[in-house]
Image 1: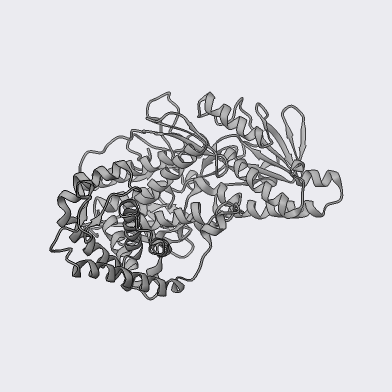
Image 2 (image 1 turned 45 degrees about the horizontal axis):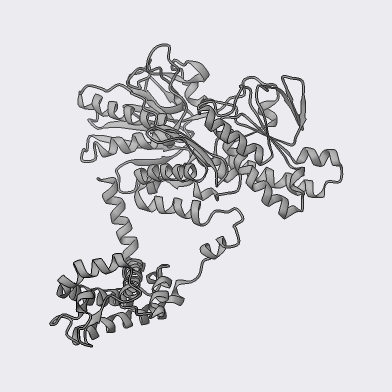
Length: 578
């Protein structure tokens, strides 16, 4: 029998990714542990942001992170396969073509929509729980607007332009928030009056977003109502037919679009393995995230039913729950292998954030005041970036910024496309090289004129200095900067003179070689601003050319084309092995 312990993580969601990385980071030098992560997809999906694809804000690849990128430079085996069953006694995972033995298994297959037995709901509604779902909704919304633009029957047209989101939780509100913005765009595109579009949120409970405070609920409600969304609370859906739905009150809403976000249950695969389950099919686990039937099988995130204390609500289906339970399970797998004590799961939720379109959000995070509007939107982006930096470093973080903030797919404002327009960098090569040449010559001229031998910088006290001295304080110099010149720069003139010469030559060489061009151009911009504040030199072409070179000027016919990818690769490796 092999001494190598085979640890398999089934599912590459938030919890599965965290579990696999945690085991790797705490066992990376060991040869007796083999880690494998298996998923039916080759990518990790940011499930909490699927509404952005459904509402046409972000392209699909903006939410899909290749698993090979995440686990690059690790010893985690990434397997793309659809597991169809598990032989619990023989400890084997089975697909249609392969079997995968395990000594320890972490179930992280996530959840799926639950329909609460509502007649017709499954057959006649759209759900938002996978990338396929998001793309299906996106295509459907486009089609109803296109059909409505050609429809002559007023009743049929109204049905096409009535969009209902069932469920007023996080996903439901985020979905309708995206549709509010996209509807404006679609109406312009298809020539449909905006007031003909009816957007509904239907919630069975007495209020939307029940996990938030009343004040944040009121802000979210007011924002949606201002945008024309009709919010119906205490309104359970009792039946769904093709083209209509019925509420408990007996009211019937005719619609061609019902997006169901009314609740989730454990993924049916995990729920039907033969392990003991509790509510909504979730697998029962103990305080160490071990399943109560099989101590070498752990269940995390939406797969598990965990009560921290008897009588308290179970662990909620949230990203933080998945990540923390994944860390706990991973820790305890290693503890079991090493014969050390396990640690209990201690859930520590930090708050909730809900985006309602791209420009408004509400948030309550531990240690911060309640936030709404742009600040809450920025906070949600920061949290997402913190997560992505943790699993993939700067490269994946840069991709998120590019998709979310620079190149989203929704129609831009007038000025937006001008910031994101792409152009060939090789057109900047002549400007970059000439600018570099001019910086080198400027530095050499200072050296030849004695900047290494004599004091050439003068401040307030040296106003009567000779013509060869460079006066750093003039009418254009702010008072605070004059103080810096007199207190720091002039008393250390020889040091700063040499630094200026070295910096100018360094900027020039870097620009000519196309090496670290962004840094060189940024320093050049700072130097130019400094000259304007002190000497009053107004050589604006230096400044404008330096700004132009900030846009990746060294990636064409420059060393950045080779060096930046190399450094990115090294950074990834160091990050994963930190």
